[in-house]
Length: 141
Image (cartoon, rainbow, N blue to C red; front, side, top):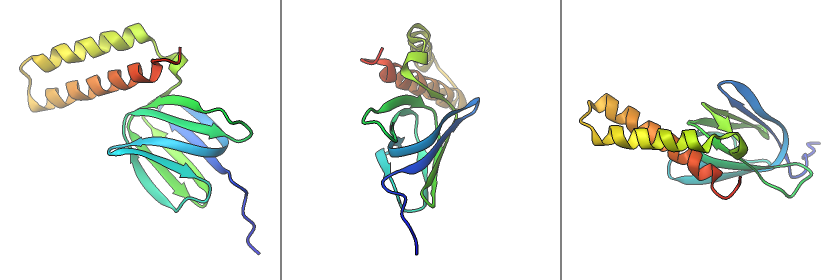
């Protein structure tokens, strides 16, 4: 007889430089390219592309949400286990707001310059990353 594990799933969030979170979770909301997706226990198996932005999750045993700003990556859902692989994952309190503002201003200035297509996409990605980091810190510091 198959026994369900209640209303939680195992979540592991891995960024390029660390394991950001590992444990049981009730809900995960991730930024997609066309909005957000919520993942709950016993979600259908799939792989989802993740965009830069704010994600949040609710660890087991608490009603509080934990927030993070993530870079691009993907989430894999298999057999009630969720693995989120992203370039970066930062808690709002870990973000240096002054550095993020400077990066945003630098990227905006680069966008105003004449650039090759490659440089343009690089500048646009830098601007997007800086704006996601700033948005993630607003109202939470």
